[in-house]
Length: 172
Image (cartoon, rainbow, N blue to C red; front, side, top):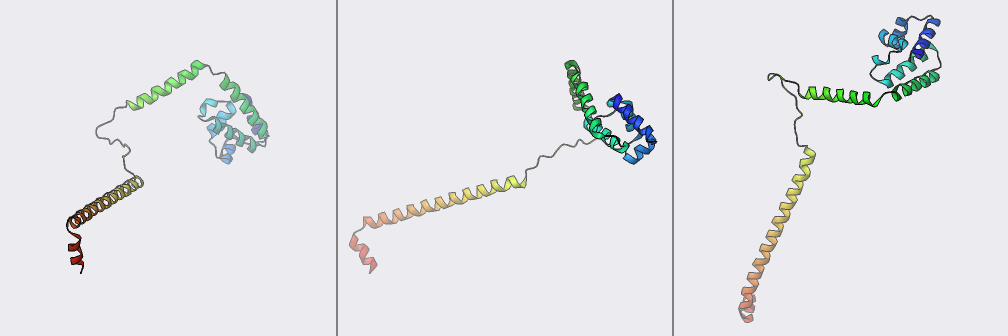
């Protein structure tokens, strides 16, 4: 990365552009450009954003951006492939430790902790309500149908118990 930074710095100087002028034209901070020129990749949190900064800086200086991006990608591949497993595990341990510290953070009783409210979504309630109403309607319909069937059976059994002539007498 130092080679890329030195190349960009020499291109900037050859073009007669000050670092402040380049930062203003690119809407970058002066420290970002200084870190790129010094090859300080640790000053950047995101490697992809750094690659875009290098690409934009190279385009601004009139340098072939494809070769710079390829060189940057090669550097990042070499740099990341040399990271040992112990370093990766240590970084993971530190991240977990940081998360644990935030969980165990002491909170004043006077501050309000914002927790997400548990709300039932109206969309979930509507199908449940509709299902309950349909089941109630079916239950009531079946109850009245069975009740009417029992009433018809009682009436027909009473009629069957009497003589058929008596039934016909009522019909006249």
